[in-house]
Length: 250
Ligand SMILES: NC(=O)c1ccc[n+]([C@@H]2O[C@H](COP(=O)([O-])OP(=O)(O)OC[C@H]3O[C@@H](n4cnc5c(N)ncnc54)[C@H](O)[C@@H]3O)[C@@H](O)[C@H]2O)c1
Image (cartoon, rainbow, N blue to C red; front, top):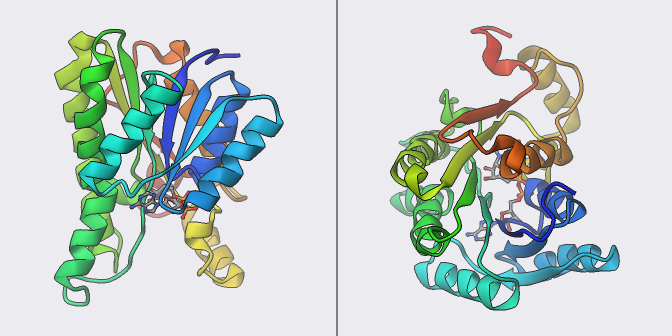
């Protein structure tokens, strides 16, 4: 039990990496606020945690809206306590070059994938300064190197990498750590539009390690980063990509 009694809030907790993380944190003894834009998905994950004897609350929120972010933090505090860990994981992954996407598409992606982390950090950091805390963010390898046809997503995730470093530097003396996880291709509902045959050809070309990265693999890294074992780690980028970023040409 690496997180016994800790309170953790996970956004995008109703699906993929977020859902696997909710279950992994609960297995380590944490009380989990499962936040999702669609309430029924958050409720399903919270129920799985409750069924295995853990503590969880399901909260509906759109993390790109300041009022929703305030409300999700307040409900977490009143139902579980002040969060020790906030995992900003909710995200969307739209495609398109700058000449293809509308201003509204751009704003939507930047608001959900980047501004949401600003809003959440702004709301939770004042509560964390008493006891210290941990903020985790999910960016992606597209935050380190851009990809074709992913202009808004690559920009948002790159911004998130440096926002992570800014938060780490600005609040280190308050014992608040902030790190970012950069997955490569993870087998989640986000990628369900990728036909398996094309996906396998893509991975054969670009991912050196064979096999699929699972949401549970990413959740395991998140648990480690939130635990006391990582107490001196802050401002860092953690890549989990089967070796993609190791070289120029996989
Ligand atoms: N799957 C991958 O290959 C991959 C790779 C790199 C990074 N990521 C990142 O990992 C994170 C999780 O993605 P996933 O693969 O688990 O996808 P997913 O689609 O399974 O889960 C994302 C969750 O975020 C929620 N969400 C979206 N917009 C929201 C909003 N405005 N407010 C609240 N919740 C919202 C969705 O409802 C969904 O439950 C995302 O930030 C994504 O960009 C994923």
